[in-house]
Length: 463
Image (cartoon, rainbow, N blue to C red; front, side, top):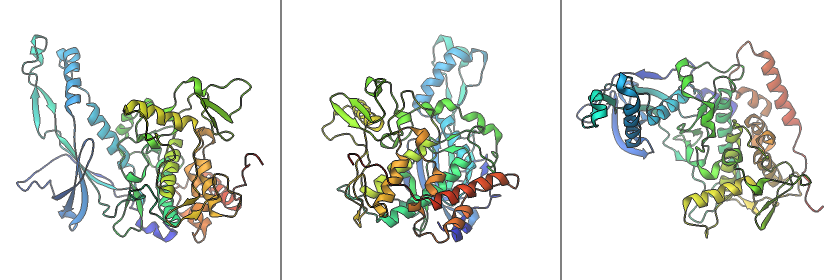
């Protein structure tokens, strides 16, 4: 996205509409939305293409999600048996709590590179059912307890360009290096905005990147496992939540859960205590032993001896894996084909690789087969050197040494082809309030510093 593309940004006053009343007619149309074909199916529901009759027939993606699933009902029955003799109202089911978190995150987002949420239809009176008839003598007093089984309806921006396709049937890249740069540049702008708002996406991957109809802009979707930190992550100029009660939905302990896609998870998420990660006092971070296979890892890239805190740095790692996928057609860490059929065993092998192994670089990248120069390119002026240097900064196993999204944005490879990069960096930065001039100054100084300093050549082992 270039500086002139900022006209695509939604207006700040366009708030998400919350509708408490649901109407479904005989044609199965929902409120003002004329339902058409199904375009997707997820863990909690389905997505239908609809036309909004109140917005001149604008196409939207209507996501229909049940408040609960059978597992939630079992949990509720157990809670009823233990706690509802005094007539207590049951708390949110785990599914509903997850959905409300997703809504709370999307309500905060107003950016050209993030899929927009237009409306939430939340009618708790729809489709009530009874539970409690034949629950046993201990629950006779709790019969006729109403349990809400209604659905949430989320009207979202319809991105008809589809997912970012990045490999063929033989796991070879299908994008040029320049196309990859454009895609990553859009994702970086969206992620920078999210982090500025205190939001960690937690599941950045190609499948969660969609094109607009004209395939001019890539947008981030799927906030089902996203996290919001209302205190620690907010930066000067970020918006306050539209509904302060949403803050109570999020707990920092949720970050310890292994949510997301295994191949894209950062080392601090899949960190585990194991003797293969322990080093003798005389050992350095250069060498880690894993059984009979010794692995050499560059200075500073090994996992710390203690689990680091989970921060927005996990999105930088996932973004790096996504960049690697677009360039080479496969993920940097993979379970061997001969691995055990047990899914838990394979995940353990994958997580061990993510924590302890280095990543390889092929001789060429992209469908246009641009020469990389290998893992340690000698030509410091080549595009291969710029790309591998960027990946090296993003795939640091210690999150404290990993670059931030804002630093990625200022990387020379990302800025390649951008006219007036200084102006572009400033104009595409998250909105800053009038009371944060010092923050603006620091932001501009960081921009100039990154632009004036190309990455230094790295040490080549053995030379």
